[in-house]
Length: 87
Ligand SMILES: [Zn+2]
Image (cartoon, rainbow, N blue to C red):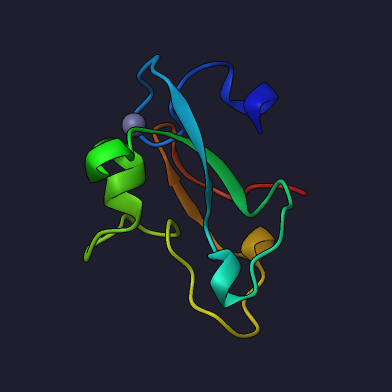
């Protein structure tokens, strides 16, 4: 997904240091797949989009529940708009 991100945060579009975020957290059974991973800015100090993703009100598709949901079938609010991320 670094290739997909092209150095830009996939949440806000900023060129910034990026961190990998698991949309379905690893603790919830999330896997290391392209559809489950997004490159987001921030996190140190719980800031930026990575902080937002782990906060109380993450944007659509940023924080997926545990269980049967498949990240490839869950819309993700990208800075382009709502998209599906392909594996
Ligand atoms: Zn961002």
